[in-house]
Every structure is written in structure tokens, then in C-alpha cells.
Length: 344
Ligand SMILES: Nc1ncnc2c1ncn2[C@@H]1O[C@H](COP(=O)(O)OP(=O)(O)OP(=O)(O)O)[C@@H](O)[C@H]1O
Ligand SMILES: [Mg+2]
Image 1: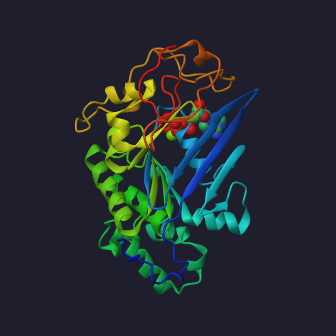
Image 2 (image 1 turned 30 degrees about the horizontal axis):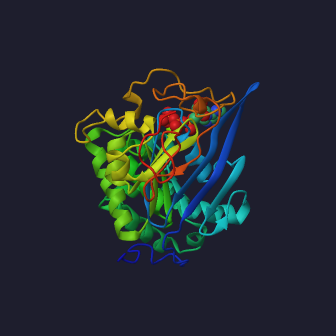
């Protein structure tokens, strides 16, 4: 049983209990001079109400683009975003503002994402939802203290009047987390929220995210290079490659029974989640290059690096297939409902 929200009784309520986000066949392209980079190539992903889903993939696979598109910092060029049953793909004005209040983004670099000229109080005040703007300032400050308390920055009064540069890296990321939480969001899209922090501080911030999920049902889309932390925080893992989700399933299942050749290499390269320095997707050595996103990819995007590549992989992209319950993979090595390897 979830406890009710402990903070923010000052907020005029729209009692949120978490809501599902459905990303449906989303495309995103960027124009770069004469070239067009097709960065998201039909991404489908669901984060259920209060769920923690990890998105892993190497640098350049499109994770941050998906994060920014998901929170509507970018508008998709194709596909749909459905949040709490509403199509938010192209909403604007008041509806977009409402969506952004309920689905928050937490960035990688807390220093770059916090305005250095503002004190913590101003930073947090600016993050409050519209419905909190009309509160008397005493009630708003009480709310800010509660939020700082939730993220372990106590006593809150010491922090409210500090500037970001006066804080440690871990404290800054806690302020960033407080900012994303102040309006009681349903979902936080966290783009590598701990990768800039000292190793000693990472676990603290991850545990804090977990406890906020546990207590208040706040869902996360947790984006990371680090398979070990994905397994630690998430119930599901989605693996991204060249702008597509190529495998998705329960976290333990993905680690124990990775199916896609790409995921298998990632998992094999990260044998010990406890060992420091292992488990980073970008440290994994592959032969061959990922595809050029400015060109059309004919067939499977992983064909250029795959040791199992077959003729059909070069002709048509493999569709997403279900293997086990909730475990899906885009690879011709597997047929629906079958986990045995088939030959060419
Ligand atoms: N605004 C943009 N304009 C043009 N190209 C972009 C833009 N944003 C991202 N890209 C390109 O899209 C691709 C994916 O970038 P993205 O930042 O989403 O990857 P990522 O998976 O987050 O990588 P990293 O792990 O390094 O953060 C890259 O090739 C990048 O150069
Ligand atoms: Mg990124």
C-alpha cells in the first residue's frame, strides 16, 4: 500500500496517483546542414503507473533524444505520446504546461541544469506548478522545506538561501531532484542522473529515488549507461540501439536471459554488478560501427556488428517478437513464443 503524499498539503489538490506513459512508434529527426539525422526510429515503450523502467544503450543511441521528446522538450515527428489516457503528442499552451508539471525531467549535470545566479529557494519556487503560484509565501516556503526534507537536505533553511556553487555535487543533484519533485509529478524522466556524481554519492541518490518511488508511487524512466544500476533500480529494462528499442523485459530476465546479440554482449561484459568500473555500456568493445543515422538503414540496425548476421537481417528489419511473458526482442534468431535459436 502506498502512503498518501506526505508533503504539499499546501498545494491545491489535483490528487495524482501516478499515471502511465505510452510512447508509441515515436520518430525524431534533426536537420544537420544538408543531412537529416533520423535519431528515433519508431520507439515504443510503456512506463506503467509508479513503475521504474531503465533505458540502457551506448552513447549516441538516442537516449537523451527520447528523454527530451518524452517530456515534450521536442515534438515527435511521428508516432504518439499518450499520458494518463490523453494524447499529448502535439498539445500546447495550458495542456502542455499541465503535462510538464506531471512528467518532470531530471538532467545529468546538476551544475548546468541549476541556474547559478539563483538561490535554491528561487530555483525551487520556479519549479512549482501553476496551482501553487497563488499560495501565500509562507505556505510556499513550508512546501519547499518539506520537499528539501524529502530529498535529505536538512535543515532545509540552511539550503534555501544557498547558491548552487556553494553545494557539493551530491547536494546539487538532490536540489535538482527536489525541483523535479516539488509539484508532485507522476513520472520523472531521469537522464543519467548520477553519472556526473562521485561514485560514493551515486548510491545515495539512487536509493533516494527508490524510496520516493516506494513511498509516493513516483514512476521513473531511468536512463543510464550502466547496466548494474539499471538492474538495481528498475523492474524493467529496455535496451536501445540506433534509435530503436531492440529488447525489453523484466530486469532480472534481461540480465539472466538476454536474447538480442547486442544485449548479450552488454551483459557478458558486465559480469559483476558489485565491481566498480564494470557494467558501463560504453566500455564494451564491439567490432564494427553503429549505423550512420543520416542514411537509410536497410534491415536490422545491428547487422554491421553482429556475429550471427544472416541474409534476411540485411534485407528487412526484424519485428518485435514476444519471447517470454513481457520479454520482447527484435531479432530473427528468435520466433514468437520460442526461445531456441533457429538457423538461417
Ligand atoms: N539537437 C540535435 N541536433 C542534431 N543532432 C542531434 C541533436 N540531438 C542529438 N543529436 C544526434 O542524435 C544522436 C543521439 O543523440 P543522444 O544525445 O540522444 O544520444 P544518447 O544515447 O543520449 O548518448 P549519450 O549516452 O552520449 O548521452 C547523436 O548522433 C546526436 O549527434
Ligand atoms: Mg544522453
